[in-house]
Image: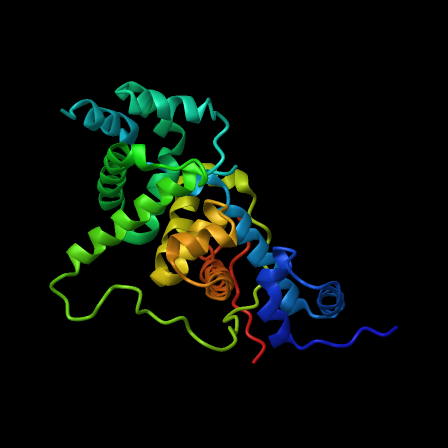
Length: 79
Length: 213
């Protein structure tokens, strides 16, 4: 059976759901067919996946130096 | 690595009991695995590290005084995030009290489809590069450049790895709104990071903007 085509705008609308695998198999199939032929949408998908992976790494939010120590001291000062 | 599931979990229930029985050091043990999570939540609202640290300390003190009211049916991490988020919003409200415009939840999500600004195909940035300050700073700046309604959802969903349901509870918005804002936040962030932190993500390859129209 032929896959029904999907436009770039429709692909962008679903990219986040696609990454979260929160999407119907039919839409997934259409998007995958689209990515095979559309370099721009593939670039958006890859870039978004990369960015999501990077921010998901706990290292992005580095606590300021001495954060834990100051917090501990504040707790110890409590009456 | 998920901030909401620290490797060391100890026995939270036991620690909570000890704290409620007056053991202050047990509270520090209880809170320690969540420090970064608390800090990141505060940062997602107030955007600068000095304010975020102040918010984090206030939130921890509030958690201590309200610990007896914590009910085990909710996750301790979600409860802490909720306290921190409320504390951060209060801080923001105080800081902006003199302004006419409200900083509260009246920011509207943009309606309609998101069109990426840029279609540059960059080399994937390996996570090892996060060891470098400048890469972390570039990501932090990009996250800070998002509007607050997008930044908050992005931090709760993609940084803290909370579920959609948990995010709806903390932010007090619907599931559909969480999804729309999350989607836009991710695509905005990608657009923002397309040029890299110095106009060149991968050594020797200068960034070239790609716009098909």
